[in-house]
Image 1 (cartoon, rainbow, N blue to C red):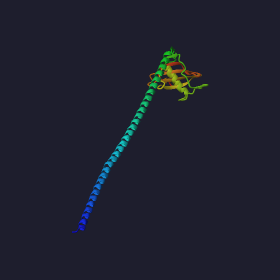
Image 2 (cartoon, rainbow, N blue to C red; image 1 turned 60 degrees about the vertical axis):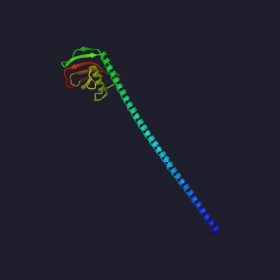
Image 3 (cartoon, one colour; image 1 turned 90 degrees about the horizontal axis):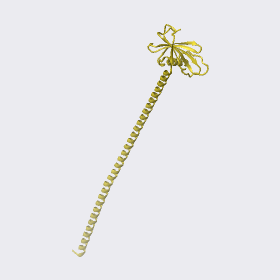
Image 4 (cartoon, helix red, strand yellow; image 1 turned 90 degrees about the vertical axis):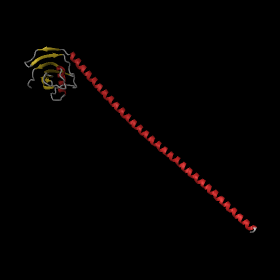
Length: 227
């Protein structure tokens, strides 16, 4: 074998060795690159997913807290409204009780201020008769007065109040048996309680701008016939 052939084979071998080495280097570099890319994808994607999960959890927590806050505010508002309503009701009840107490006190004082005097009975049906220093009951009527005997009229309502004052009966429960003309600006009325155990004939006179004033009361044994 001549020197040329020897050098030729050596050159070919050297080139093959260099090519193999280059391919190996490229394969190693490629493998490393793939590993690096995979690592970045895996760890980077995981971080992103974790971040998204944390963001979702944060939003869910905030929404839950907001809902809880709204429900708490609504419950507090409802509680405040109920408390306010209860306070108003209690205040109204207290005012009503105070008003009733004042009314009872006024009626009691009026009864204590009244002085009565026994007079001669006018008939066999009269158990007792008496006069008193009753004041006019008060009126909402103004101007010249003409007695209106119709049921539900202002006169009839005020006559009942005056009769209740003079007899001590309850104006809201007494029954009017009869009411009629007793003279000029005067009326007579017969009233009784619920079980008719108390029957009275009351004489009343009209006082301008002050209303009906009781002047005499007769306690009766029985309801008289209506004239």
